[in-house]
Amino acid sequence: MLEVREIYKTFNAGTINEKRAMNGVSLTLADGDFVTVIGGNGAGKSTLLNLVAGVFPVDSGSISIDGQDVTRLPEHKRAKFIGRVFQDPMMGTAATMQIEENLALAARRGQGRSLRAGITRAEREEYRELLKILDLGLEDRLTSKVGLLSGGQRQALTLLMATLKKPKLLLL
Picture 1 (cartoon, one colour):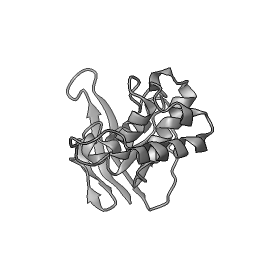
Picture 2 (spheres, rainbow, N blue to C red):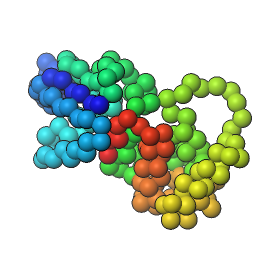
Picture 3 (cartoon, rainbow, N blue to C red):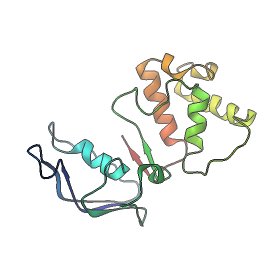
């Protein structure tokens, strides 16, 4: 399902600030695997996740998700495979947009963009039902700006958004 093969990543190569972050790292995960990556500050945990997500390009090696080589795909093209919840609750949502608008963006992840009606009545009802499960009262605040939510509410919303399309890979 996820195969990371012999990836190398160096930041600031050829400078006094050169830092080798990945040195031939390999990892293979099957469907349903749950993995915790543990290490001290600067060990490369976040770098590994960012390489898998496409935030940074690898210097060499390969990354495949569900049998498809995504090594050279940019982050936005990998989004159809990956759901992501960030450590920082302020990331992963658009603060100036409404809760329902954030959910609509997540629901359309990986799809082509087009000019069409905004959020339909059926979509709004679906979002309301999904938000009820969180038991945070957000189902009655669909038009509230996400920036007005607490950190915990935003984190819960981000998790809902990340899993809305049943991604092949969930990075937390």
